[in-house]
Length: 298
Image (cartoon, rainbow, N blue to C red; front, side, top):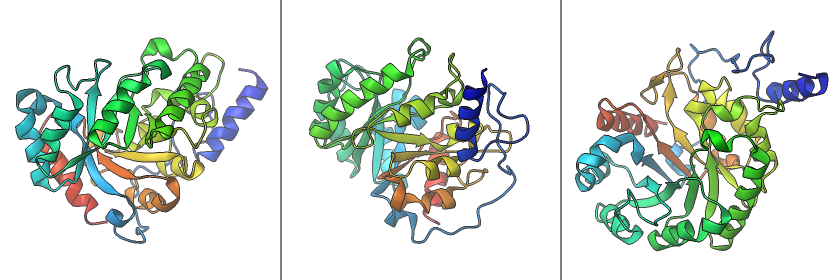
């Protein structure tokens, strides 16, 4: 690593509040956050007043959906959620390879909820009409690319360029388009750059937003509060999931992520929605029920 790239990365990490003795040279970032600390700052108003709605990413109940899709969607509505974030909208324009956007939307709206956002696979600007048309058919306002396969992580500049082109098409259609992070976007590339920095800095803020997965940000060793503070206006939504002191997932509100402090920034962060997500497969309905109960106390 040359001195210029070291200094550049050090500056980026300093701005995110993670630089300490010996941290810059690590391939996986570690954080200076106190993992035992609890939030003390209060949200200025109920969190429901700072976002359009609180929903759930239905990947949280993926096994249950496979067994009984309509019953599971109904169960989510009965918990008190207003909306969902859907996933697995494919290039065939169908959910789970079988439901048209109109059919899937009918299942959701029959419960009194709506589809606020949708996760797709990675797609190019040439394929964007498939997903834009699906979103419009469901009156869904957010489209999110949730993941990059390993083979696509060699040129984040090209990814950013594609995001800009898709974002332009989405914005023209009245939609918000964005990218969802995991932890690998904070690992150095072969040319010693931070991928997340590339994606944010090389995309047009008017066309491309980001869905900050607060758990994966923290798992990467980044303080999620510092991350959100660094990029005001760039976030469309959060994946709200929590980490314990070992950085494994835990029930929202029982871990170390400072949700009240993060949500207090919602008026400037750009966030429209909070989407609860819990990737654990044990007791998923109980997990997302507990998460909503916690969020309703803020």
